[in-house]
Every structure is written in structure tokens, then in C-alpha cells.
Length: 504
Image 1 (cartoon, rainbow, N blue to C red):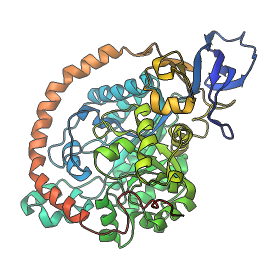
Image 2: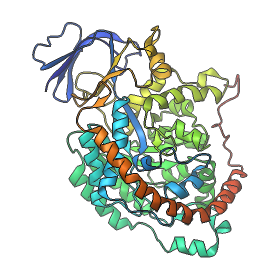
Image 3: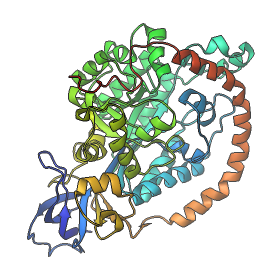
Image 4: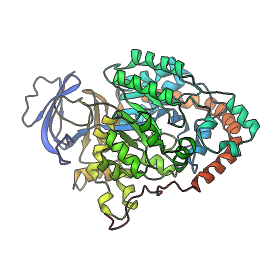
């Protein structure tokens, strides 16, 4: 179905364009934008949307999400990352989920994302104890059915869990440690075969869906696996997605395990490249930032999750100035408790103002919007997503400007970052097709899917409560690990070493 929009306020966020909308028509041909301008001939369009009183902008891009955590939304609080992981990514007693439950939890994230303005997500999917082809297909099918653009991973850890965090052997009971060690870790050759099959089966699916490699972190994966993963990413022009320096404990980890920072370790092994996306990047040193800028890599700035876990604040302005690409992510649905990118933008626009009194290091609303669109798209190796221009994918939001969020109307960029919640969205277009309109997803029965998921949850939670009981045996030791690491001086200020007032 060909589609057009007439007479809207259009915020293109294209290269060289500012954050001020212009009145224009939009003509869409297939899944791409054919033209943007005033007075276009729209007569060939099968549907013309009246843009009067509407804003059209690029769809939001979630640069880092973990949909498996949807089943734990609203469940945990006041835990640092390493303690929280005992329950959301348990060592002992993890359930192997049916493909149907995987589908339902993914659909839950996709539905919320689509209805609140996200058109493209990077979903880093970890399954316990390892991902099966059937589970991965369920994730792809959910995104295909709901109508999002998505880049989906097979997340992997191939080192025993207790060997991924320093000091655990100092505090974990030896018998309990032996029980954890007996579980082993993923096999590199099996995982690589799984990824090759996924690239053959899913990469480019429906014109909207792609696969990516996601070695969990340099302390959780062998360098051999990470280098093999990078080769796969290069072969398929896919992202290499990982986690680095989310917590101070991880800053300590680099020195304890490798005698250098984790960024320096990545650089030394040829893993810091333009296609590398680093989730978090909070505890980076000056030298780390320079290496990242030279590589032109990306970070996913997960501002809400970082706050909830007490992880710290990434030095985003300094990363941008060094040449690092920055996208915004919601992170796990258990650590941010949301997939809503308008909430993420709001938080990102505010948090850096308390990082330093020097306003030169704060982010503008336009900075935030670009991170939430083109920055996230670049991190997913998508050159034709994240802005509105002829030839780009037709992923866009049509927003009603008569709502409370835009009344009275002042600066549109400020309204989008600080006032809007996603409730003003009239329709969401992905690949030239209206996927949500009037607050409803058009291609799935969301009431049925949510009801089915609610019916599945009592049995899931009953089993998960037993899993929580098993892993609670590690908790006291992990708090001690957390305390020991946080007593160390790692040469990085907790807020990212931003300059004090008046510093150059």
C-alpha cells in the first residue's frame, strides 16, 4: 500500500538539518521515502494522511534492550548489577522457556515499544542455559508479527560464571562454587554454528529484521570467541554488540583479570571497531575515550537502568567530542522497567546537568533526539534508518500537536524530550506501513496476547521463586564482592571525571 502525508510539520533530523520542523508533504514508495517537500503530487498514494496540526518525525531507535527481562518487570529494586543478576540471570535452576513463552514476552516488549514511538530496537537476547533455534525463531516471529524493525542477538557467555567477576572465590562457599562450576559454560563452536544458521535463516527477514553477534562482555567471554564473533559480524555487515564498564566492579575487573582497562584489552585484541557497540561505557578513563573515538565505535547510553542499578553516569559529552557515536537504550525491562524511549530521552536530557555545573558538558534536546534516532540506527549498522530524507526507510511517527504535551507550543525539540510521553502519537509507521494507530497495534490482537501471557505467569513465577531461593545462597557473598570492589581506587571519578566548574 502506498502512503503519503499532506501538510505536516516535518522534523527530519537529517544531516545538516536542525531541530526545527518545516511544513511539507511526504511521499512514500514501498518501504522508503520517495520525496519530502511542499506541494507534492500525492494523487498516486492509496492513503493520504492529513498532517494538519501534526508533527512527523523519525521513529525512535532503542539501541539496547533485553526483552527476556520482561517477565521480571517491576520485580526487583535496590540491587547493584552483580547482585541483581543472581535473580534475573540466575546461576542455578534457570528455566528453559518454551518458544511460545519466548514469543509472548517478546511481543509484550514489541507492543509497548511500537505504541510509544519506537520503530526500531536492538534486542540483546540471552536464554538460559543457551539459546535454541526454536527460541530465536520465536523472537523473530514476534517482531515480525507486531511490526517493528529489530536487530536481534544470540547473547553468549563462554566462561564459568564465577570466573567472570573478581573476588567471588574469596567469599562464595566452596561447595556452592563447585555446584556453579559444574554447570560449565557455552561451547564456542556450538554458538558459532548457531550464529551462522541464524544469519542464513533470519538476517534480512521481512526487510525489517536482522541478526547480530553479542558476546556478553570481555570478562565473560574468551578472546577466541570474541574474535570469531567479530569475523562473523564483518562477514555479514552486522553489529558486534557487547557490555563494557557498566559498574565500578567492572573497572576493577579489567585490572584484576588483564592488568589494563577492559577498553584497552578490546583494543589490543582488535575488537574496538566502528561496528562495535558498547552498552554502558560508564567507568571509562581518558585513554579509553581516546581509543573509542579513534575507532569510531558506538555506545548505548542506558540512562534509566544505570540509575536504578546505581552504576553511575556515562561521560556522554566527552565521548561525543572524541568521535564516539551515542545511541540511547532502555536496557533490560527489569532494570529500567520500561521500553518507553520517551522516558529514556527525558532522563538523558536531565541527568548530565547534575554531573557537572559546567553547562558546556550538558546535552541539548537536539543532542538527545539525535541519539534516540540516528545514533541508535548507526549503532545497529543501519545507514538508512534514523532520519527522514528521500531514500531512507519510511520509519516515522505522526504526533498530534493539539495535546496537553504541546500546549502551549514553544520549542518542539524541548517538548519532545521533556513534555511528551508517547501518548500524543496518532500513528506509527514502519517500513512505509502503518503498524499502530489510535493507540492500538494493527497487526496483532494485543489483548489476546497479553491475556495469554498473564495466564502463563503463575506457573512461571512458581518455578522462578524456587530459582530465586537457590540463588539467594550466593547473595551475601556477592554483596561482599560489591563492597570490596567499590573500595578500590580505579582512577575514574564516579560521575565520569567531568571537569569541575570553570575547568577547561
